[in-house]
Length: 223
Length: 223
DNA sequence: TCAGTTAAGCGTGCAGCGTACGCCTACGAA
DNA sequence: TTCGTAGGCGTACGCTGCACGCTTAACTGA
Image 1 (tube, chains in turn orange, brown, red, cyan):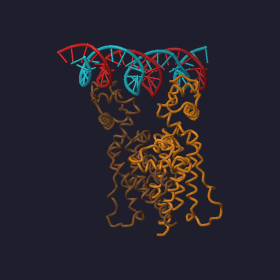
Image 2 (spheres, helix red, strand yellow):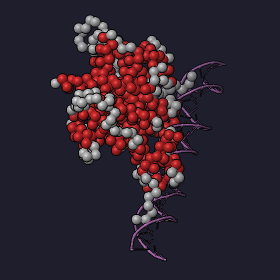
Image 3 (cartoon, rainbow over the protein chains, first blue to last red):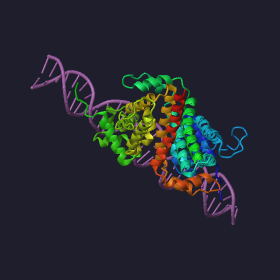
Image 4 (cartoon, rainbow over the protein chains, first blue to last red):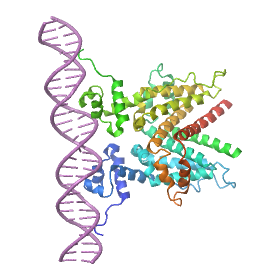
């Protein structure tokens, strides 16, 4: 077994992430990554079948830093009856916010997230954690599926909405300057939205979803 | 003023959509669109500054077919007290489902939606309609901003989640076959999810969001 | 009727992309 | 020391978006 491998997948992913963070998504080319690794372009292909796999590696690498442990993040240690509490809401908020914090540190990865999410082991680990919380909160299987996919859609959707058109940005300003006759509600609301922070927006939307989920939980318990 | 224009933006967008529907996103090139229009490649640039604008045109064209009128879609005509009813929930569901129906007929446009949504006039018209419903339901400005952006995130997020990894697809099957020791909840829930339809998933998630919104509306009225 | 003018239409060419192919060579086993 | 394997990479190809500048169609004013 001659000539041992000189690179690992995490090393390649880290190099790709460095390029992405430094120069943006457009600059993320096979040549640039190879250059970052001090290699010839085609050498990278010894470790990666194509560009798609490199992107998948990159996404998984970013998500690998998300802590999925929520064992001890509940509200104090005073609860004795399992399942009936609302700790699960805090737990899910924690898991979601951790993803957002991690991704927020590498915003250029956002366009790649949805395309490669389903091939990422660490994304699965996160999903397993979310579903675990939902299960221990008493949701049945069908409810868990709907809730999980809705959370997935919201989190990644919100990240992209924020990435492509942040609320306190030029997009909102343009909407605020719109003709109030043509777009009365949009122009009006946009003026109000200019001083709203991205965290308030994200957290508020997440809380809407969790509030709906909590209503389902209460209805289920009433049976 | 010689040599009148032979093409309109809608014609170009329609040609691009034909290419997209027939051959997919990868095949959507400037050459292909020009070919569809029986033109030389560079002729298209007389009408469009670059590829990005062509994509924006395409997105706006697709969204232009979404009916944003909800004046007469309420539950019968029996309500007399304005604002207090729950017709607004039906109205928003209608508006959201119309987007989904339209986009569902051209799924290959989904990856382009979020990137160009904010430049589309018809997207603004839709947004104005949604915000109008929220306003007449009694939500104040900050609530409208949060609710609107959350709906935006959910709708486009869900479309993409569904596009890249539909629930009744190979992704779910792969998850169901996962090692139950490593991913107990994921493997378990995936097995349950295989026979759930995409509409049930989408509608269920939307209802969670609307349920949370309704709770806010009730709390606001209690004041 | 017929220049004159303006913009439509497009052929050519270029830089940069992903990557197929095949050569050279560093390395570990025999 | 020799051999076989696999790492490393130079070259080249097809494809992309698009800059540039030519040709030419269509309308206007004399």
